[in-house]
Length: 288
Image (cartoon, rainbow, N blue to C red):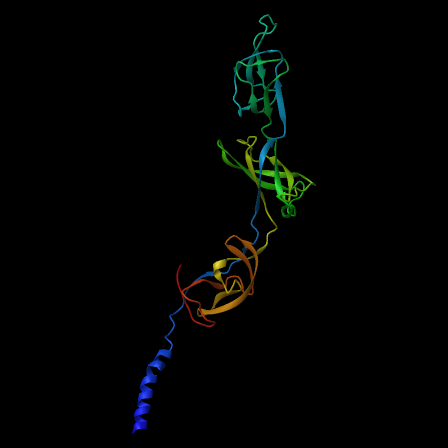
């Protein structure tokens, strides 16, 4: 009798322990997904520089005198022969009366004497540049040079107050043989091709040149998609069955990284989970 009672007590004490050891059923796994899609691994590189006029032409005083009146403004585009200013001689007995100084060629006025200024003979009154002859020097990295060829034409753009953003082209005319050791860059000179137009372009304007790298297609994924120190990815088989695949990583692209894996383009991959699923576990796909 005592033996039966003792066994009953032991069973009563063990029962709560057994119940405690019983595992609670795991909650279903909710996941968010997207389709695996190849994209450009290398984005176009942008190079920057300042526009500089290639052709400059000075306008000089034919005699000593005083600038009576200025007829144009700095930055104004003028035609050949268009009046720029009036110049009166110092000596009132001079054979010439007030002289009209004209533009020697079509272009843009980048500097001009102020009204009332006294000038000597042959002193510069104005400086003009051709409106369709500009160049820009940019600093290209050694890596960029692999994608640059002499006479190659690249897309370029500039922005001005009058015309906004304008698309033009830029032709490689010189690649310096000297390397800047401090920045590991090389000076590359481009001629700006004013097609369709360089209207609004001025000296000192920032010009952006777009350099297309050799197109390489591959997979770039956000870091958050990867697991186990960026070594594995979850994807879905038919029937929303979770599976894991090993991956290798390549170059960094901000919050994304190049990924090498043995999955076909279009495979459904998991981008977020309510909890980490096991291999072969059926999951519920949620709408983003």
